[in-house]
Image (cartoon, rainbow, N blue to C red; front, side, top):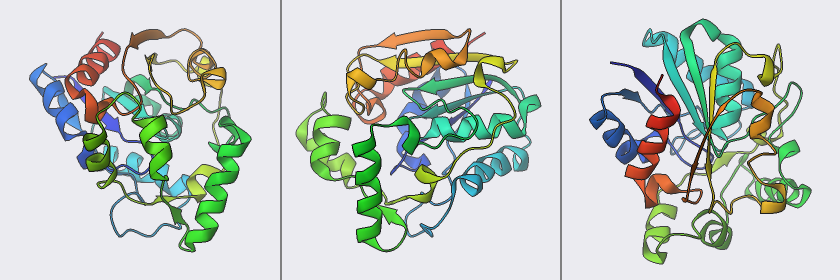
Length: 241
């Protein structure tokens, strides 16, 4: 069977992708959903971007995974970009799921509106541990705007503080994403309000991939909770040959 590695976003961990993974497995995929270093409950929140990327590269190497489809959701786009840069021979397609597509020397903070970056910094400084949580009003109206309120609260209660350094650190890449010799796909949720639509995911970030397969769905940012079957179907379409 073909192998899918799906990398979660900020404040999440790999366990929250279980429903999506189950549907993907029903479509014939072998699915891995590792947790990025620093995103597990109770983990050290001083982790930087390089170590976070390294944790997923180490997971792939430890499980001897090859010929994989590597997907990243949101912040996970930073991770899969760095992983591909380190081990391109193991990856046959990259899938960005409403995800950040950085160029060399850029941070996630560089790719969001300046007030967002300032808010992240302020929250991390207030927390004092290097990690910070997304405020619930932003989660409910931005990330979860297309979902039920009870489900939004239930999902929010499963999130973990995120290491701020992974947002502030600059990524190091050998070449631009448009030059990568690998299959590339972008999943764009048309109801995704996690980023303002004036500075949205597609085409602002997706077009950095050069030639890519575009899969558009009606979902918001947190389809993994709200519509896991639909999310799996989008990943299947984005990842298949």
